[in-house]
Amino acid sequence: MTQEANSTATDSSAVDMMLDEADSSSLARRGFIKGGLGVAGFAAASAILAACGDDEEAPAPAAAPDGEAATTTTAAAAPTTTASDTVAVTAQGPEIEWEMATSWPTALVTLFGSAQYFARRVGELTGGRFVINARPAGEIVGGLEVLQTVRDLGVEMGHTASYYYVGISPVQQFGTAVPFGLNQRQQNAWLYGTFDNDGRRSGIDLLNEFYAEEHGIITFPGGATGCQMGGWFTNEINTVDDLNGLKMRIPGLAGRVLENLGGEQVTLAGGEILQAIQTGAIDGAEFVGPTDDLILGLNEFQGDLFYYHPGWWEPGTALEVQISLDRWNELPPAYQAAVQAAAADANMRTMATYDVLNQRDLQTVKGFAQIREFSPELMAAFKAETENVLDSVAAEDENFARILGPWREFRDGISEWHGLAERSFLSQQTQV
Image 1 (tube, rainbow, N blue to C red):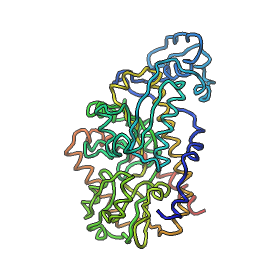
Image 2 (cartoon, rainbow, N blue to C red):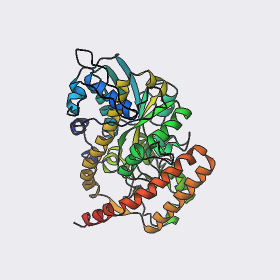
Image 3 (cartoon, rainbow, N blue to C red):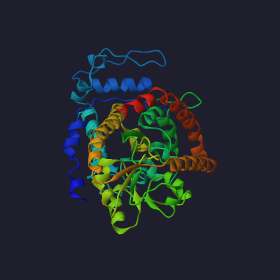
Image 4 (cartoon, rainbow, N blue to C red):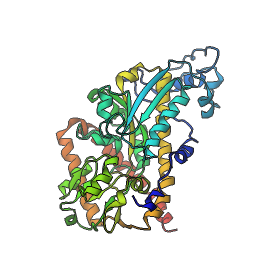
């Protein structure tokens, strides 16, 4: 990495300071998993978290009509309770210590910091009784082996990107980002708040149904990067012909799109990219955006550098907290609520941190690389081939097809809505 690039690497204490201002939030889950929390159940469990440090036993929740959250008479459960009040209590519950494998080297202070922040928040929300040790990639298992290790009970939980595992099942793509899919705000809307045709299930629920059956795990969004950059190249990429023979580090189903257009997909964990550049194993690479790309040394290709945008395969990228379902079902409801709240908190704060850091480090990149937009010809080809790949995968995989239908319906609807006020405002904002 160049000295200039090194100057952009943010130390973890600075990231911690930004993340440390967080307030916790949480969302409901379906009850198909033992101990899972519906809307009423999650509200009640949140009240348990807020009240569990009281010296006296909290009174039982008052009865409530079906579909409504139960209420309590404790001050901690009142609407005026703040997040800081919740963090300050001392939890009553078992002392538990879990290991969490991650896909991130410690150098990636925002991604690994997201896992650390999640673990710290769980500890705060449980009065220090539920300890989670976040481990960097390679300390327990490699960066692309997290899901398998959680599934096989090698560790209790993991922090990773689900699309690293499309080789196990293409459904994994939906947990992170689908090419030409949803931006970060839209991805969160699909995961947390949208419903499929039966009027009951959010994106998280659809995924967790599959994860429970396929892997014996449950997952929650636990970090976000926003729309990513399109990668580093030493030659201009203007036409489809320019993709012929191009060996590129690119994840998930986007690699199949690239290969169908003449390129070659290379799948690497973030910490392995620099070595691949130095040995000439790849001709192009992408990871996230200016901050992480400089930390990992993606700018170390020899010769002229072209930094392309957008990363059409990752318009809004979600990270996952993955937990063994057996271990999840052993947790007290209040600890489950703490995990959900901490994951949602980390999801929001990680995105905020990237927005702070990337705009700063973009200025460094502008000093030595040519920033280019993929040509209309290329974008049209990428988009058309993406739809072909999605259709072909759905034809081969019933589970993928079951999620693709409602996902596409949501994508088309939200794109129309955001194409009105949001797009017109952003087009004017960039002209200022």
